[in-house]
Length: 471
Image (tube, rainbow, N blue to C red; front, side, top):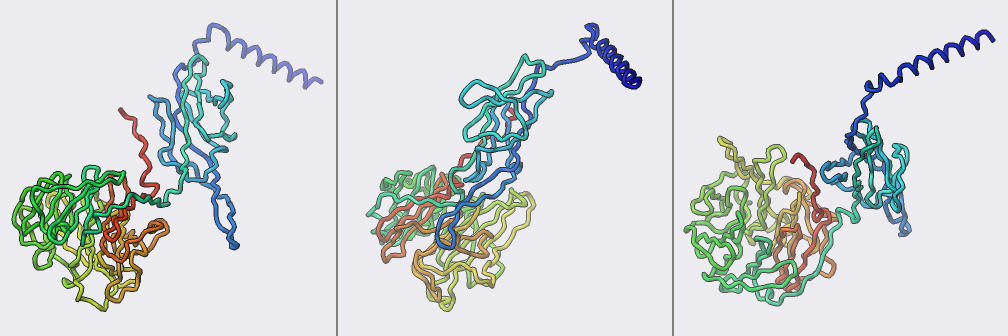
């Protein structure tokens, strides 16, 4: 009993001292901040539900866990919005999400009910339903002020690597062309083709209605092969002269040139094959030409150009890799089944080294097939190619596959994300063209029957959200 009395005495003594510390004279020793804000937001582990087919062909669902902290959230303090620009994958369970919220000056975070004005205290251990944007509030410690934020957890509604094709109206005028090439200029797709005596052109928008272009200067029958775009201007080669145009109708002569075909353009140069079939380049938009060096078998330089593509180097964004591909002459390398791919590096910094064209046909089982009227283009971060009837000893089916290279043309594979459109046919013709428009849509234009297809990989159609709020 004596020990209990001593403990009570100590307790009351402490209470008296505490009361003294909280007297009115010392109120100013405690500062309650009126300003507060949400300063950080992240997710915990999130569940994703995926569909698969069982061995019996039945649809089944399985769950995987996603590390939510890998998806960065941005806080726009001006608009009071919080969101993840890189959306969570399709199938994410957004109805049960654990989130971590940080606040300024120990602000108190609450969540507004979806259907009422009721507020609930935020807890890092309770899941939140983010199937729609939620209002988070952070109150100052004194309770006099608060900030309300719209918090959105973005989830993809479609598979990012799924390719969707749309058939556009058939254009009968294409069937009169013996060869064709498509480019994109100022938001429009332009198709150039040979009618046997001259090059004609048509243009369209996304709706697929084609309008014929009437050129003031007639281009020769092979000019379509050389049509390229550089700095929002068209270039081609006609009757031994490099020509340029802003719209495909009014063409102006640049200079006479001893070249066979324009291949394409990089950031600073136009690339071509000279009359002898060797690569040359022009740094002044076709006025003059310089021979490029090559490393490899000169006999394997492409004769029939499939396309030119460029990629900025990962190690130096001011430099780029130029890639060309194509077939040899019809009567050359008849025992081969593959096309030829070459590349070079262009460095643009003062004093940079001048690099050579290098042959990319390494000995492997995944080289680009040798197909009639082979076409290659850049699509997103990869190269894609397709073509008609097999040549040489190639056994591939005409227009049977889209070939994809993720290593700058060294190897080529088929990919489940890139498939030919269902219902695609070009009759018995090998004449076709491809291009990529300003909305990252791939076009296939058929000379055999006038079919036109427009498609896009889902993720290349997603908008980029703002991620910087410094101004």
